[in-house]
Image 1 (cartoon, chains in turn yellow, brown):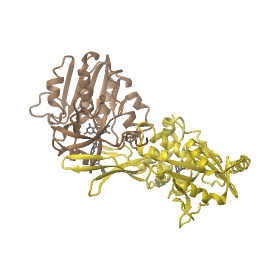
Image 2: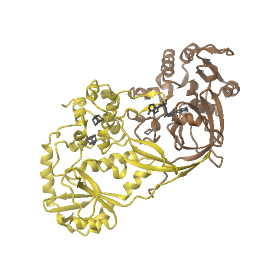
Image 3: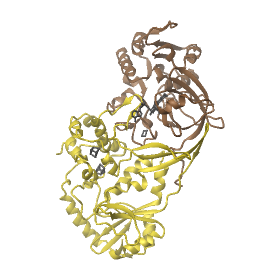
Amino acid sequence: MFKCSIDSLDKIFAEISKNATVYLPVDNDDGKAVYTKWENGVKWSNELNTVKSLKDFFFPQVENLMEFKVEGKNIEIKDIRTESEDFVVFGVRACDVRSFDILDRVFLVEPCDSYYANRREHGVIISVACTRPSETCFCNTFGIDATSPNGDITVWKTEDALYWNANTEKGKALLDKLNLDECDDSAVNEQKAKTAEIMKRLPLASLTTENFGGGKTDELFNRPEWKTLSESCLGCGTCTFVCPTCQCYDIKEFNNGNGVIRFRCWDSCMYSDFTKMAHGNNRLSQVERFRQRFMHKLVYYPENNEGIFGCVGCGRCLAKCPISMNIVKVMKTIGGND
Amino acid sequence: MSLMKEPLIPVVGVITDVRIDTPDIKTFRVVTPDGKKAFDHMPGQCAMLSIPGVGEAMFSITSSPTNTEYMEFSIKKCGCVTEWLHQAEVGQQITLRGPYGKNFPVDDAFVGQNLLFVAGGVGLAPLRSVINYCRHYRERYGTIDIVYGSRSKDDLLQYKEIIEEWATDEGVNVHLTIDREQEGWDGHVGFVPNYVKELGFDTNKTAVLCGPPIMIKFTLDGLYSLGFEKTQVYTTLELKMKCAIGKCGRCNVGSKYVCKDGPVFRFDELDELPDEY
Ligand SMILES: Cc1cc2nc3c(=O)[nH]c(=O)nc-3n(C[C@H](O)[C@H](O)[C@H](O)COP(=O)(O)OP(=O)(O)OC[C@H]3O[C@@H](n4cnc5c(N)ncnc54)[C@H](O)[C@@H]3O)c2cc1C
Ligand code: SF4
Ligand code: SF4
Ligand code: FES
């Protein structure tokens, strides 16, 4: 484990910036934390977490995939992919770190998505342990330890110091370059114990996944509660856009006068045209679309991924849904542990 | 290293033949610009075809894998991509990627079986690939029965091939039907599901159904009443697709993605999925 004073953080960012772009949570004009490029004078936010997750860095909201030149009957396909820049994202919370295990299992399995893989390869994630979890947090429901997040490097912040520990080869390579002082882990252990106590007292601490998981489709799919739960859902898709693990995308095209660009953009299973096709739509009403989002996270995803749930308990959908519907209400109602 | 082969980037194909099958279905022959087959496939697998600026859509590869020279697609006019293709001429380039999905078990579960194919309308497209594969390796399979129906005589796909090639094969029985009486048609008249029941097949067969959902539903009921088991009947599902590789999240039924775990399913497998297709 390594240690530095909080005051030296700018120096550290300056050092990392020599080889890679650094992004960190910074307060915007509305006082909300958003990932921002580090430059001299940019200050790390005190907010618990960012409004949007860092999914954008690896799976951008809009991304050009390829280009076509069309001339008469002929088509030329242009591979417009470029090697990603090296970048480091600092200040990532435990929940958001876990979201990449979930996205990796979609994008990196054969046939591998090269756009995502490229950015994963060039990106380093530096997580920061939580000390003040909020009442919308329930990462521990999914077995995530907010006091000791994963990531390439884990950082613990105390009043006046930062403690650093590398978890991966990539993380070690970066940490080695920073020349920090070695130290023991007593201060970190003390902090972990304190935060663990706070976590136990969070309002959602007792939420469990026991009635969810692979193999539960028959039991849960036809539950009548889906109708009442989804009744006022606006189908706005906010929950899917702020969610660090939602990965549905659409592929579209536009003609820029010089050629056709095929791009992809985030899509949402909450939208009415998501599954609309020639002979109809297999999810005709919002009940079915709403059910899909939660069944996917709580049953289908774990069924296909050794029991890992597709939610990380970040609480974003709790904070952002305009009608205050969210996965916690679904779990309590459908899972029957209200 | 990470700029590896990208599954979403297609290759260029050229349309070398366009056959008008019915008023709204055309069959397109496609090769690469240097005249080769773009990739190998197995019966039941599909490909994503696109016209840059118009869009991309999924189609069954209707030609048999045993055809090593080109691929064929039978395409029904119903939207942007398909309408555009219908006005395309020979020489037109398109893009294609694939093959996608699980194929029919022609090299395992089907071997040694009597086969019953039931198709309606453009549903013949995926079955044509299996049928021609099984005709090519004729000695591996038992009898082959083909029941195929359409609205009218003019809506029967691959009519010439059915009459001149399939119907003349030893051990292949072709049963055609059209929905309503029509001048110049002295064959069977009536809907496919009823015809299947009338023909009263023995249950010593493996059946494959492809067509509109309503046809599948009633044919299946008919087969069950004849004594067929769910484990003897296969079909293909058709859901909206974009990526075709299990990543865009669009085509799932429960925990299965039709693009990679399907489109071929056996009815006992479908029974385990929620009723959302
Ligand atoms: C596995 C698989 C195999 C298939 N095999 C074949 C095959 O062999 N042959 C074949 O002909 N087809 C096949 N299909 C179906 C084919 O993929 C669709 O018909 C195709 O998507 C049509 O594309 P399009 O661009 O022409 O239609 P689109 O322009 O996408 O339109 C399709 C229909 O949806 C409606 N629509 C689309 N978008 C909207 C919107 N925003 N609002 C309202 N309505 C809308 C249109 O009115 C139209 O009726 C297959 C599909 C799958 C999934
Ligand atoms: S479903 Fe809600 S709580 Fe779970 S990861 Fe997504 S946004 Fe966070
Ligand atoms: S659950 Fe809420 S955020 Fe999600 S689509 Fe419905 S109204 Fe929008
Ligand atoms: S088409 Fe994208 S997941 Fe099946």
